[in-house]
Amino acid sequence: MTDVKQAARISGMRQFKAILKKDIVMELRTKEMLTSMGLYALLVLLIYYIALSQAGRGFDVTNIAGGLLWLAIVFTSLLGLNRSLVHEKDQGCLDALLLAPVDRPVIFFGKAIGNLLFLLIVEVFVTPLFMIIFNAGKYAHGISTWGFVGLVLVVGSIGIAGVGTLLATMSVNTTGKDFVLAVLFIPIMFPLLLAVVAATWAILIANPDMAVYWKMIAVAGGYDVIMLLAAYALYEFVLGA
Amino acid sequence: MKQIRIALWMGIVGGVMTTVAFLMSFFTAEVQLFGTVSLPQQIKTAYPLLGTDATGFMYGRPWFSQKIFYFHVPFAEASFLVFTVAAYFAVRFLMTKKKEYDTSSRVAMEVALVFVVLTLITGDLWTKASWGVWWEWEPRLTTYFIMTLLMVAYFVLRNSLEDEERRAVYASVYGIMAWITAPISFFITRVIPSDHPVVFKSGMATSNLLPFIVAQLGMLMIGYAVYVIRVREEAMRERLDVIKDSLEG
Image 1 (cartoon, rainbow over the protein chains, first blue to last red):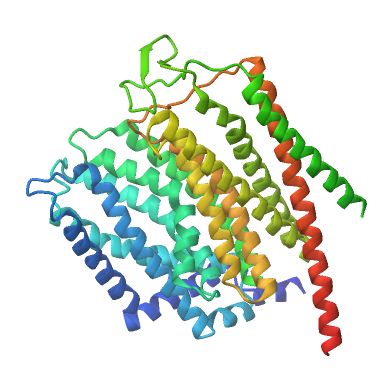
Image 2 (tube, rainbow over the protein chains, first blue to last red):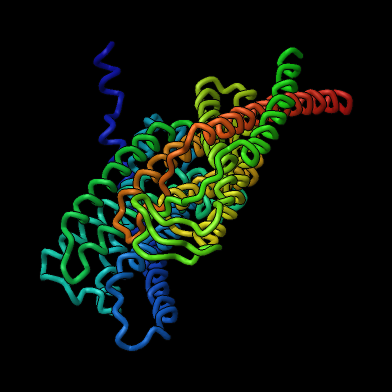
């Protein structure tokens, strides 16, 4: 009897891979999310130019570069999170997932990792562009700086994608959709954003402050762990409603 | 019925206590002369600062704006306490799916929001009088601002959902997430590198402590009374809706 049960039950890993694959294949077919997120990030950079246009030619963005970069990432991720779940709702995909014998936590991880992947791809595209356009990397010490920046991006994106997936699943069922997502998302992300902006700043300045950098990475990592645990625990209730 | 009566009495007692605290803060509490504002450089304040001593600047005249602290700190503490109560009811709702827990959670959030708004108003008055500015991105103020936004977002979420059960579940989930975020952001705003020193330290003499405690208890009693009465009002409204539906159908 147990043998039959074991065989019939698809392992969590396979379920997870299936959900992730679905998102990736859908994205590869339409390329909708990546192109719109990428374009949006570019437009945000343009708006930065407009905002800084009267700041003078020799304006040194180093102190605010971390903040500007993360601002662009936050706005882009709001867009991406919303879209990734709007499809699920409109096409009835989420309902189908709930009908299938899939564990609820696996749905959370599948969606969250999918969103994380797309966010990271967009970041890989936008960050060098930002650094070049605004000459924010002028104090960079070669490849190690970019390694550290990459680490900050990953740690921050994990938090954004994880909590954002939970909030987006809620907001997509409301009447306000994007607006509600922004209103819910930004206050909850606030501590993480403070930490990662401080870490990015610490790396980009003339004499990188590694003590501050690692402390901020630790703080951001702590935030990720706590909030992802909470999101993971609460996702089941959100799906059930 | 008994609970309502207790709540009403608590409300009255609480109101009396808060008024007494108000009077005490002006008549019996020690007038503070020095501000314990510790800053590396002088800031523009409502009235001139004299020289420094070991703990900070000396104000040029009695520091009346400190009186507002007897209300500001109790409001702030009460708001976080009631926020915790709301989060507790949110957890209970998710565990049991009983509607009264969701109502309790929402009403507690409303009371907490009232306290939060009062805290911000009194706080703004204090910062203008003591520091000369309406706002400062100091750790405590920033965290408090975030807490305000979290609570407002809770109500935005509630208002944007039609289906009752879904609304209750989502609001509870968000309430729990918000409650976890508030202490985290308190911690993080202290830890990030910044030029701002922690601007206010305070030690309070005993004659100051009494109006403070009276105000705190009084406020918590008023908060409790309002909460109980509101929950009753919601319960009655529900009964009314049920009766209306049965009459129409």
